[in-house]
Image 1 (cartoon, rainbow, N blue to C red):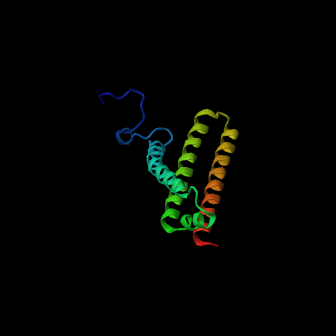
Image 2 (cartoon, rainbow, N blue to C red):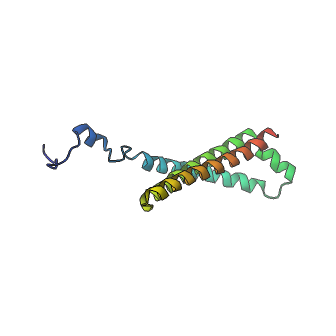
Image 3 (cartoon, helix red, strand yellow):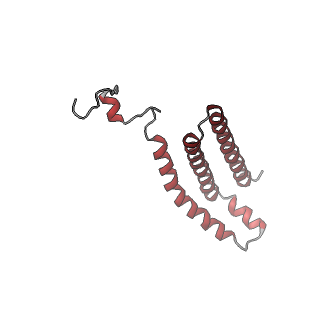
Length: 132
């Protein structure tokens, strides 16, 4: 075939799909970019919410943070940011940690940390929202 290296074992379909040795292609790359883009708008929304809370009493802040629209925006911000953080740290670990056992422990720690931060943050927002 034209343009194919003589010892290349990939099929034409594999070359078209662009999947490398990890068999995932550019999925992580695109998830990182999409969550980064969404994070810009969600961060602006969160900054607007925080600025609107300045100078208010505790009861007013709890009431505003407990409203459904604000709670949904904050939950979207948390989920998006935690997922973005998880993907980014995972890429750093895969690129720079070379020992297999340490890499596995680092990936597990990253997943646990991101899950714990996300769960605790979502719990706090839901508790405010439902007033429990």
